[in-house]
Length: 405
Image (cartoon, rainbow, N blue to C red):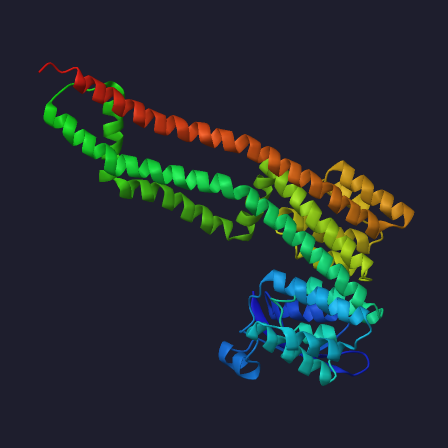
């Protein structure tokens, strides 16, 4: 992905300028045309030139999502109270404690005061405000419901963040347990056992088989540690290189979906992301085809993302949303049937949000079940390894105590 500076005009002759992140110039032109603009120029300037023309562009590449959520929610509240957008932004600027974010808001306010729309002013910062965010804002502006749109956006971002944090926090304990146990085993093999081995060899006493095996393992690890590193590193580098290719990424993402338990968790995560994103966009007034185009870029699993892209063509030919999803077979029958019912009753956006809520519950249950299996397995495995080491050393110590003096 790279940044491209563009200039375009709409049917009224209004010229807009901005910066967009895309894979290539052709992608920028396509995106602009899909938005109803006529591209005038698209260029990929150097970092130095972009920094000189817009010094804030590279300053705000990463902003904590919670800060964006707070900004969205607070701006929604101010607009709902009837305060104009420029005054609302001035209020937020006056209370903003983070200097970098404050400067970004000042830049946005300056663009709006010069006649730019809110969506175009935000679009200058594509990492902070992705296409999903921008298109919802644009739809809110067109329907004069910007305050309600911002509220939906803040709710969407909050739910997405809560779900991600839930999964991350659920994985912290197994990760810490694995790292700590692995570190303990390495310490025992490389520092503790060699000291015992030296003592036993000085005594010349026969030692139990398990202790001898343990000492050989310790000696191998200490003398040939680099072989173990290469043994792990080379396959990883080969896998990483293959995964960076389009075919490799697609194959790996497809394989992940077939894994027991983990595949279900990944699939449910993508279902929640797809359904909540689509439901939020449709409820915000974004057309179906445009919503599918945006959502396809939010799906992280390449195999599912390609299916959503194919879905775009099916919907464009008038097949609806539910039946093409059923043909693709990427989502469970329950989710597909709920979407079909939503289309039949004219409540598609509401049903999509219901699908997201339902499968978010399933996702949390799956994650909890996965952890309930993994935690005892990790404890048992680590306990067996450490137990083998301790028992082997104790047997050797007991055999030494039996030496007649």
